[in-house]
Image (cartoon, rainbow, N blue to C red):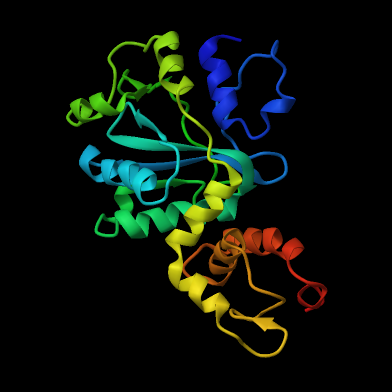
Length: 256
């Protein structure tokens, strides 16, 4: 295993503890885990590439949400991506809820067809992203992770003509940190202040706001509940959100 493969495993493999050091690195090490959870979340902006728009998200998640900086990548075709790493896997539905909240907060004026969210709203099967760095067969260019101070230079040509150095890519990734569970929950709280206030409002006896029996929900649980109840989200993802939420509810909810 070379340094780049080790960094990709450290940041994005669903369960790096199960990966054999002697085994070849998977082509896409950030796929959904066998348990339906993910550690990698990708937000992309393309057609055209617009670093200014995505830079707002990159800066906002650090300044507003106090999260570690995500990796920045050029797709090798027509856009930029932000790669978020989680220290502990979360359900795909919750990861989508986080990315969608970022989209609404920072990119609300951008046309949806220019944005890519992974995992997406199609459910667990919609959880793959093309490998970075990787050769794009259609045009012959390479996707690559890039340094923040150089990202704007790729606006006209969001790719590399030659394969990037594995050691240079590893160097870029080595300084990145995964989002810890407490940091992720705090970020969800800040992305959904209205939902947080609603949950504190008393409802019928024994029923938390939102129609879920039990006490107040945590920020991750609220996100799952929002995804589950959102008619605009694809049905498979709503079902996955319900499955992920169920173990956190009280016996009364599970008996419904």
